[in-house]
Length: 154
Image 1 (cartoon, rainbow, N blue to C red):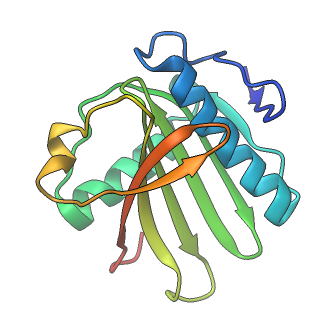
Image 2: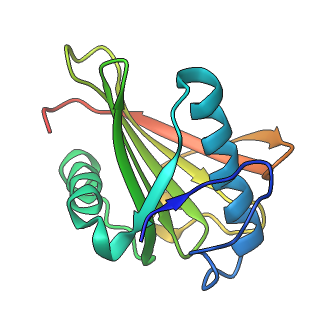
Image 3: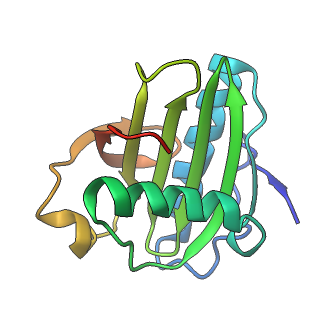
């Protein structure tokens, strides 16, 4: 069942099994607010078990581009197109959020972003490969993030 993320009244619905559920809910709400304000897009997620094509696409990019396999269980995912950009998100039980921004018309904006919920450790599979910058969020506390540019077609 789809879940529309409310960034006014932040909820842990769908994220209850995460040890950092409150922080992950704040991170998810932060993303929902961004897409509503920038693109007037309502951020709606499905359980990962119902969004296998999206999860597989994201995992395929990670594997092909950087030989990365995420060990945490995906909880929720979404995929949508705004202004010619295919965007996918996967939220994981560990508190990790991965997003893919994939411009459809050309390859000028294609990247994978990682965001870590406040209070979680950097996942082992990412720790030695990426440096994480910090940003403050009213909804999510301190978010640590990193990214890489996608080079191939996916």
